[in-house]
Image (cartoon, helix red, strand yellow):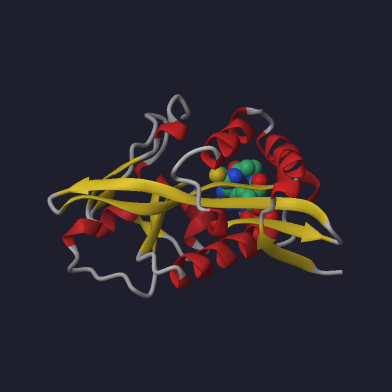
Length: 177
Ligand SMILES: CC(C)(COP(=O)(O)OP(=O)(O)OC[C@H]1O[C@@H](n2cnc3c(N)ncnc32)[C@H](O)[C@@H]1OP(=O)(O)O)[C@@H](O)C(=O)NCCC(=O)NCCS
């Protein structure tokens, strides 16, 4: 059977925890997933698993965050975290999860999705340097500036000043990085 991308359900949560911890080699991101689910920023309709014959092999979340700038403060969304089980990597699951999550965010009317990650990986999957669109992310000192990325969706309006400024991660991300 092929790979299925579908919204996560409560019955997936233990398997998601195992996949995320194995992918990152640490419990930190698995704990982050659970903190996001318990927070106001959780968007269950934008959180997906990749399943193969019923087995969860990957996971992605798009969750709420804020952007603060000249236009005031407003909520946008960010993609984090993304994980594919180590023995299932390099078979397109990560790409399929990103595509599915971006399409769902677009249908939900989100103008853009930000993230922090490899420009090589995400740049080939719809993302661009966020700085080129007036957005900055609170990157850790070790991260290259190019790690701040944004995917512009169909309702994005470059004249909308409320979409420019500093991205502020929600409290679930405190202490990470
Ligand atoms: C990053 C990750 C989600 C990719 O998932 P995946 O299912 O293997 O991705 P795909 O099969 O769609 O794409 C694989 C391609 O991405 C490339 N790739 C994977 N991680 C990459 C990275 N950090 N930087 C650049 N390229 C990367 C691989 O080299 C591969 O390219 P190739 O097949 O031409 O060699 C997966 O490797 C993972 O879970 N990593 C650990 C957790 C992580 O770093 N998550 C992302 C940050 S939130």
